[in-house]
Amino acid sequence: VFIVCSGDFLKPKVEPLRILLYGPAGSGKSSFITSVANIFKQRLTSEALADAVCAGTSFTMKIEVSGNSEILPFVFNDVMGLEGGESKGVHPGDIINILKGHIKENYEFHKFPLGDEDEFYNRSPSLSDKVHCLVCVLPADQISFIKDDVTKKMREIRERASEMGIPQVVMVTKVDCACPVVKSDLRKMYHSMTIKEKVNKLGVTMNYIFPVKSYHEEKDVVPEIDVLILDALLKTVNLANDFVNKDQKSLH
Image 1 (cartoon, helix red, strand yellow):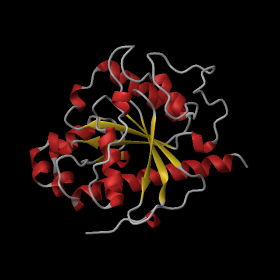
Image 2 (cartoon, rainbow, N blue to C red; image 1 turned 90 degrees about the vertical axis):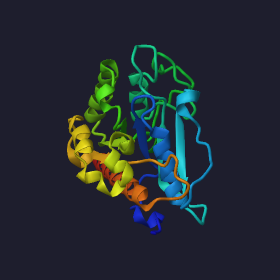
Image 3 (cartoon, helix red, strand yellow; image 1 turned 180 degrees about the horizontal axis):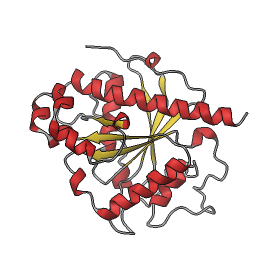
Image 4 (spheres, rainbow, N blue to C red; image 1 turned 180 degrees about the vertical axis):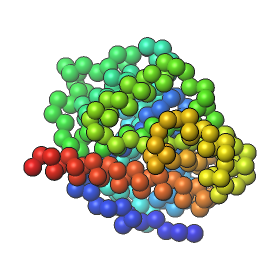
């Protein structure tokens, strides 16, 4: 058993650090966010997150620390998933708008990207409105089956984020569904050839790929699940903080 506190995270110069999660529909974005909330509450909760997939809106999740009303210095932005076809799922242009801080909270997504005349368009985003780290969420058991047009959309988003200098990581979810050995013992994650093969297919530097398992059927907190999620989260928050510090220095 271990205790998680806000002191584990460096106090950023800009609050909140904004972390955007995107990926194919059903990749486990909302489940990952819920799992992070469970860890900091130190118990499984029955709280229902706003479901960006069903609601079709942008959604920001703040995390509270157990035992007090303190809010952690980062937030998650969750959006509906990417789907095949031009008119399905979130439009890549809107993901890019979010990266730049142009989309306001509770904007309802359409098959075309938000225009600069819309009431939900933020014309003068501050540094805190912009995304400080981009997280691609991919399900381990479906990596080989992601449609080409979805992959194309992901590539477009990734390339634009790179142009903006935004750090990027990949969360590989549902690792227990992809490997029976890992399902029986999560501690064998990094010894699993199945998981290694899945991760290698992504073509991303290993340092920025984090295999995780979200809470699903568990009745209580599981340290092995928490360790994987916290390791990924801490590194993601640090990357976001580094980006903010670099951005601020460039303004002086």
